[in-house]
Amino acid sequence: MMMHDFSYRGNELYCEKVLVRDIVKKVGTPLYIYSYKTFVEHLRKLQRAFATVRPLICYSMKANSNLAILKTLVDKGAGLDIVSGGELYRARRVGCPPEKIVFAGVGKSFEEIEDAIRYGILLFNVESVPELELIERAAGRLKAKVNVSLRINPGVDPQTHDHIATGKAESKFGLDIQTATRIFADKSRYKNLSLCAIHVHIGSQIVTGSPFVEAFRKTLRFIDKLAKQGTVIKYLNVGGGLGVIYDSENPQTAAQFARRILPLFKGRKFKLVFEPGRFIAANSGILVGQVLYVKQTQVKNFAIVNVAMNDLIRPSLYGAYHGVLPLKRNTRAPKEVYDVVGPICESGDVLAKDRHMQELHPDDYIALMSAGAYGFVMASNYNSRPRAAEVLVRGSHFEVVRKRESLQQLVEGETIPAFIA
Image (cartoon, rainbow, N blue to C red):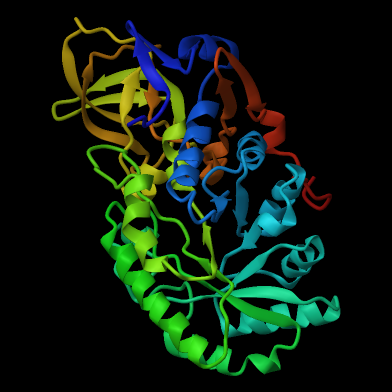
C-alpha cells in the first residue's frame, strides 16, 4: 500500500524523483515540500473505492489550501469543502465549479453567505437555527433559492483526540436530532431555502469503521423518519475523518471503508458527498528544517532546529506525532535519543520527543513527515518568524508554490501613529 512518495534512494531522501537536498540548496529552510503524485493518488483511491455510486468528493481545503494543491485536485475531478470567505476566494481562483462546492463551519458571516450564494455553490452545511435564519434572509435579499444541508450531531464517540472529535453531544458542531426534526417540520417558513440534504461529520483521524457505521445508521433512521413526513433528501454528506498513518496506526483503507459503509446505502436515491482532507493531504507533504545546535544535558539531548511551533503547531496543540528522518542517512552513525525542539520561547515548542535517531550535528537537515495537512495552513508569525516556503514536486521537477515571507512582509499593514512618532 503506497503511503507517500518520500523515500530513500541509497542514503538520500527523495520526493518522487527529486533529491530533497537539491530543493533545500535552492530554496532554504524551513520548507514545506509536497508530492503531486501522492495528492493525486490519495484522491484516486477514494474515487476508485466509491466508483459504483459516483459520489461528489469535496476536498476539505482547510487541510492544505495552497492554490497549486487545490488546482491539482480540482483538475482531477474533486470539488471543494470550504469554511470561510477566504476559502471561497481560493476556490474561485482555481476555477472550482460552484456546483462542486459545499460551505461548512459554525460561524459564517452574512457577507460570506451572500458571496457564496452569488457564486451559486451547491450546499450550505447549516450548524444552528440562527445560521439557518441568516441564510434565509440573505437568500431572500438576493432573490435566490438556496440548497441547505442540516448538519446533525449523532452523539457518537469517534474514538479520536478530543480536539478533533466533532460528533459528540457536547460538541459545538451540528444540531441534535430533535432540533433538526423541528426544523424540517417547520420548513415552510424558510421560503428561500431548499432543505434537501443531511450532513454528518463526527471527527478527524478516525482509524476504524465502527464509529462511522454507528453514525450513518442513526442518520439513515432519521432520513427514513423524514421520508414518512414527506421530506425527500437529495444529498447525504458523510463528511470526512478517515485516519492516516503518522506512527504505528493501522487505519482502514479507502477500499475497506467503502466495503464497510456502501451496503448501508444500497437502494438509496440520494447522492453521497464526501469531505476528505487529512486522508488526501497529510502524507503528501513534509517539513524540512536544519539543526542549529545539539544541546546535551544530564537528562536530555536536544536537537534545536530552525523549525518551530509557528511552522507546525500540531505537536504542541494535539500532542501529535510526526516521524523525523535525516535527509542524509548514515547507517553507521551511533544512535542517540533526542527531543527535537524549535527556537521559540515557549516550553511547548517541542516537535518530537524521545526519538531514537542517528547522531545529529549542527547543519544537518531533517524532515518532519506527514506534514501535508494542517501544517502551513495553521502557521503563524509568532516571535516575528517569517512563514516557510512551499514547494510542489511532480516527477523530476519542482517549483516554489509559495515564496518564503520576508522581514518586510512581517510588518506590512502596520503603522506607527503620529501621536507617538
